[in-house]
Length: 158
Image (cartoon, rainbow, N blue to C red; front, side, top):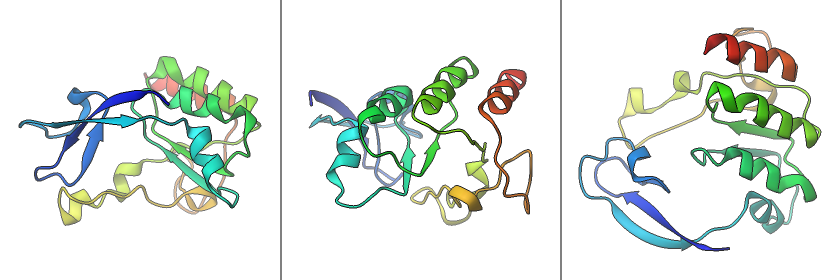
């Protein structure tokens, strides 16, 4: 992969990083700049010797690139992707559909964020897969929704 600049916050927030310095939360001080070799999401999946059950994607605007790179590899059974802007949802859901994904949930990850309880150095995304709670269906409903339902809902919320 190509060499890219990554911005690290090593002061008080735990280890946070981004390709975009303005996206590092709470960075009111100097960020450390580091050059790293980038790899695609498909290279990450290929590097494992076992099937990948779950993949959390948090690549700040590059989610579609990550998903699209998986076209020629064994795909994870479950994905967790931060909800992009409303305009990007249809494109991302369509890309996931081309990979064979047909059922979706929107989960409010913030409900499981340990930062609210334990401080800034902690983070969590909560349950995933079948145990994840869709924010419209609510607790006790383990259901999934179609691509059309998810896309229409996000566009309606925008």
